[in-house]
Image 1: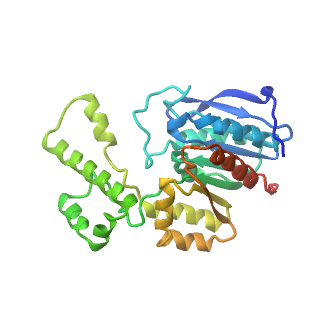
Image 2: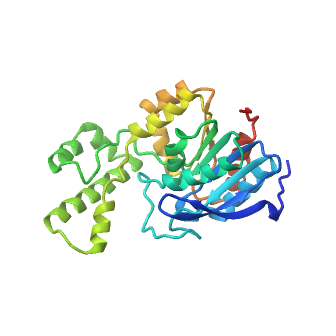
Image 3: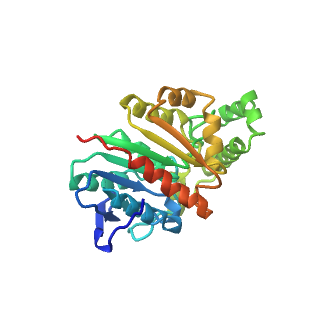
Length: 306
């Protein structure tokens, strides 16, 4: 199918992002049959993403009858504010909620969410609050390793951290690249937390670091419970990975536990699709084409009317 859309179909808007206004782009479709909100990866400029992938996706979906809202995250692209770094465990849910509210103001139509990398966390976090949710697409969805603990590095005691480190399962994890990266990050964060207690500093910059020091070791149980809630609601979910994505290795490992149980329970509504290469960075033309074709085709399946 050939997808085209005129320039007049796109409109920049200011969205209430919770912490202040953010810039959004609405790509409209005449006689729209559904809405799509795209939460792109934070480091690539939210409303465009690498190689303008989100722009191309929005225009293809609009040509197929969807109204699409894409946006720049708070402090990125054209959105005001300042952010030092994006955190997987603290997604800007206010940005995603504001974009979704804007989409649903245009018409009370079925709404789908598309999240890419860090944007998947925001999309998943708000999914429970969206009535008439037609689908959720999670591209290169980052998970902690299968046995990552829920305690934050700044809160767990040193003794408990040491005991945790010598467990047989933890020792085996050092031989798995994805698990080892999480462990190293945890140790670094824990060391930072301890040294700050021993040598407290009073600068504003340090206060910001202390506020953000907590956890890159995120809570797998919480993430799985959010997915399980969607399965119980029979909301269609698409997980899309490149077979060389770092996130894919984590996703496969996590299926040995409760995530695998949830995915099997959601058979029929939950789809896992894998393409060749590194999809998280759209590093090849083939991966870009695969992303557009798979996501567009999945979202353009028949939409139930409310």
